[in-house]
Image 1 (tube, protein in one colour):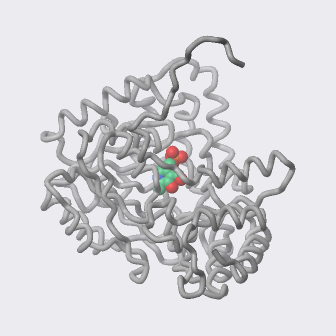
Image 2: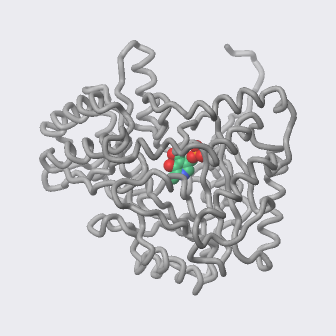
Length: 411
Ligand code: PLP
């Protein structure tokens, strides 16, 4: 309605220009519209375990429910002590993890909030952060939002998606402040060897880089994959390790995550004070969910049943891997961890110029929702990410339909 009042246009500020999060971008918006119109969409786009029948251990729910009466007030900005103590003992059980105490632990509304806080506290305009390509795109978005420049280092598909040390070295400048390592990796499912991680730490050591270790999938490992925490190889460097309840404990909706600061701090007082400041300005994380942390990390680790042979996650990973590789012109490195597959569409067979358009067309024709590879800051339009969370029967239907669609798709 026109009111006659002269309203100033509210445009998007420049600082949002390079901030993208395509996992919930235009393709997902179109899917939501189709659902509103009554269509059933097979959603393979978000690593959100609960809606796929992965229920959280009951003890987690019970503890949180029991805590509701005492969780009405704000907590300490860093989080409640019992949860931070539980996080400390979780890392004391990781062989070689540097000694940390409750003051080194920050709880957040998911890892996401802690990533945002960290980059805001770290970066001046134009400071650079080395982020993997492909990446979990929040790292790139949070760097841009904080005024920094994300610089993408390549992970080599032919090398099992391992980061290229050579590429990392070639991209370091005097403005590089931090190196982001996502292990196990989203979207590729790669799990990095101790040798490779040691080389990454060595680069950080030589160039005095802050290490940011996103290890939210550290317990979602298949076959003989072993996870090595980056901090265990770098007790002489400042390392921030990120993890939480969203994946291993399947309660992504509770928004419970943590960040552990390890290594020397004497050179980083300003940065760490900045984090404290930002932790206080958000007052505190969701308090009822903080009460779920202690029982989750110290109780029965029910994820183990899901990842071993015969477990749902293991079977679905195998099924996705096999079906994708059976498609003409599609290849997929076997994910060693996490909840995703990141198949390649051979450009000789599938000539794709716009991978988001491909996902939109797949959605319109087959009602299947996946995310385009460029949404993970992958430089060419020749990959897709699917989540391996749906029940095998749904995954099978989705991948059969995707295979048929691709066999006749032209752009
Ligand atoms: N880091 C990675 C690698 C992720 O895949 C995700 C979620 O998908 C997050 C962080 C964010 O998790 P949270 O739910 O704790 O905010």
